Image 1 (cartoon, rainbow, N blue to C red):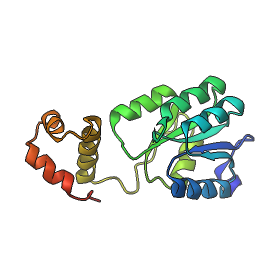
Image 2 (image 1 turned 120 degrees about the vertical axis):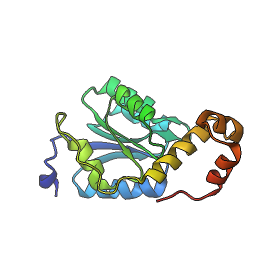
Image 3 (image 1 turned 90 degrees about the vertical axis):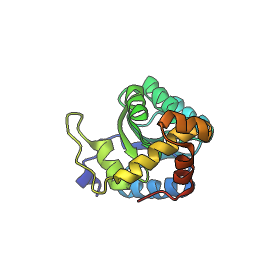
Amino acid sequence: MAEELNLPEDKTLLILDDDTPFRTRLERAMTARGFEVTAAVGTVVEAMKVARDNPPAFAVVDLRLDDGDGLDVVRTLHDHRPDCRAVMLTGYGNIATAVAAVKSGAIDYLAKPADADDVAKALLARPDAKPEPPENPMSADRVRWEHIQRVFELCNHNVSETARRLNMHRRTLQRILAKRAPR
């Protein structure tokens, strides 16, 4: 399968995600695709050490982590290895974080849960290649829900402040927050 992906000589890959089951599945899948997973870590501190001591050719980094920000890891990777191809993963997709990820040096930005094929394609894509449209794009209801959740989190879970910023009635926001995420 490594021939099919056309991997370069240096196949080292750092996976940084604090979701242990997801990280383990991705590590196994990327190893099966021919990558040499150098570290599957869940903290920014561990990832920074790997980035400084033995920077990999590729990286898959979660944006939001328990102990910090994945953007710092991407910057450190590029400081120590400018040709590192990093892909940012996030469950909180929005334009502002996508722009921040690219400015930090990420080559792509994928919403979680991303499958291993999408991650491998993003890591190995030519710089001038246009991405394919997603197979299963988020519904408009899901995009709206994600946006509301992100603003709610940025407002430190203050319903009144979130409602004001979203220009909606507080009770309407409370009803939306009480519901499950749409598919």
